[in-house]
Length: 335
Ligand SMILES: Cc1cc2ncn([C@H]3O[C@H](COP(=O)(O)O)[C@@H](O)[C@H]3O)c2cc1C
Ligand SMILES: O=C(O)c1cccnc1
Image 1 (cartoon, rainbow, N blue to C red):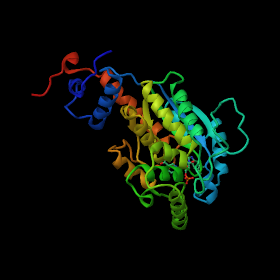
Image 2: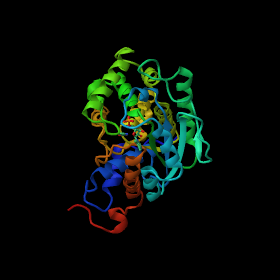
Image 3: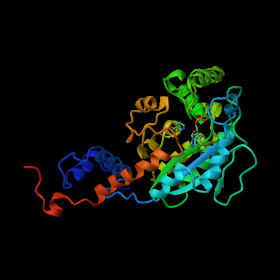
Image 4: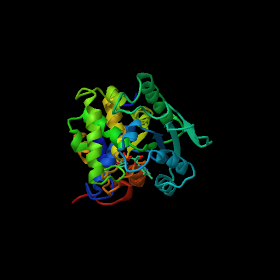
């Protein structure tokens, strides 16, 4: 096994590049993370895929979202025909998109481009009972890991679609972090003040069903999201395969936090690409000691923030790999 590069080795290589020391700011930190993860001073980050995990939520029937549950299915169709924001940003940045049905309500969608990993016909209503069973959770984690290992990618973006999934992510995070349910609850797709109050009271009812603190596995099982659980498994699988993990907004960050808690080494692979406008996201990033790259006021999900950050992330790797050093270029170092 090759010896692990130290952060000092990596910083020395970055400081030898033809630029004033530190002048590429956070790009240098990003390059150092990628070099450490790949354990090379010539990191390769060229190919990127987006996996879009779609699933429905029983709790959506309680009225926690500003949009009807049918939108999950309709947006899956939109992803498959290439019309969603995620498709547009992926095309713009040369990222290949895969769409996974983890349990969208209704008859399975027949489409050659859709990957089926259905765990059920949507989750149960977590305001009343556990969202999923242990076998469903185990299957979600395993199929996620398998999907993340497929194909030939240096990096993966992770996106989600599921009406009601800000509620699932909020409930999970309230049970596995020190943050309160109230501080984590946000407007999702755009609830007004009255809608937000209603959402909070539904989530409080759902939260009362279980102890204040849960293990990550129990939180996923109780509050679900087939797409959130599958994504968490995929993040662990991607990290194990040596693929960088580009984490998107609030829901993807919930999956990333679960993944880290289940497998701490997956953290090294994770790049937090943006902070979303969903109320709890900034808070959770603080809890995780991460400083996301971009702050664009997005609140969409689908992997859109990760896709927008991809050119920055790959530029950071290219900087370390391709930039001339002072000695290569015959440029004088600091006086
Ligand atoms: C047309 C449309 C496209 C979307 N793409 C992502 N989301 C985002 O909004 C949903 C979460 O918000 P909530 O918890 O309030 O339902 C998720 O599906 C998420 O991916 C969308 C939502 C809509 C309406
Ligand atoms: O940050 C996110 O991922 C997000 C926020 C609102 C709605 N959907 C997703």
